[in-house]
Image (cartoon, rainbow, N blue to C red):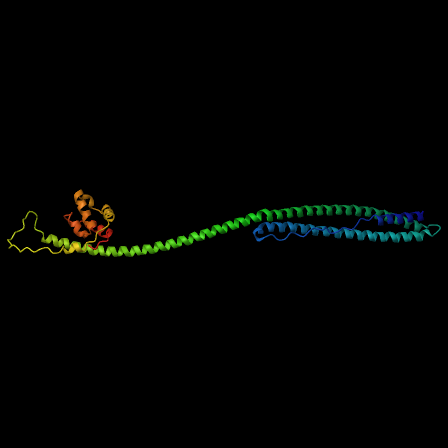
Amino acid sequence: MILSLALGLGGGYAAFRFTQPGLLTQPDIGTPPDTPTPELARLNEALGVALQDLEDARAEQAERAAEVEDFKAQVARQAADLDAMAEKLAAVSSEAQPSDDVAAALEALNRERDSLTAENEALRSTLATLEAERDALRQDAGVEQTRLSAELARLQNEVLPQLTADRDRLQRKSMFMLADQAKLNAQARAAQEAKAADTVRIYELETRLAEVERELTAALAAREAVQPPAGAEPEVTAQPPEPETPVTAAAPDSAVLAPRDPDAVAAALRSAPGIGSLTGAERQMLTERLIQGECVTTALEAVFNRVPILTLRNLIRDLNSDC
């Protein structure tokens, strides 16, 4: 009986040795794709988070592999214990009659064998569970790797070209806007220079107009001083007839008259105040005098009893006249 028990333990140990599962290997997960371009920084950050999750899964799988190695070492120790027990059984089987101590030892060995067998089955079950988890992690890692690769390809083939096109379009638009801004700045400078020149010209005309107004006021005052009162007839004193002298030249004023542009005269008369009170004949006479180049003051005196100051000022300004 002792010999049969020893042979049974040896056969179980041999069967256990030949039925051990293979070692777990580290899953071969590809390296993460290259870093995307700077335009995809936000998406690249999300990709980095996903890759970090893969690394965490790898670390967990490595821990599980270490546990499996521990289980294998424990099984090896138990196998060594079985070998020792088999040697004891071989030594005991050489005796003809087993003693009570040998019987107790065999009973203890049987109990130990049963315990080791049960523990071996538990280890095999645990090992199978760990291998299933490893396969699931490997499959999940492959699916995630495929998804990330497809997302990266989409970003490089679709999103990046669109972003590049938008960037180029905005750059062209910015260049056009800068050109328009430079043109507007040049126009603004030209307008400021023209405004400054107009301000100087207006100041000069206003200064000359003030002088003309002062001269006109003095002339009108002198004229009113020498005119006789209304209704009084001027005294006529007999003068000896003067000898006739032939006219040899025209009046001095007529020699220096410079004709004016009829359109300019018509425009100046349309905008001048006080012209509306003139009759048609007076307006026509004033127009002809101004076109002939006559002094504005003299032409107005021919149609007004009292020359309006505003009319005189505007016509001098608009016709660029000196008097």
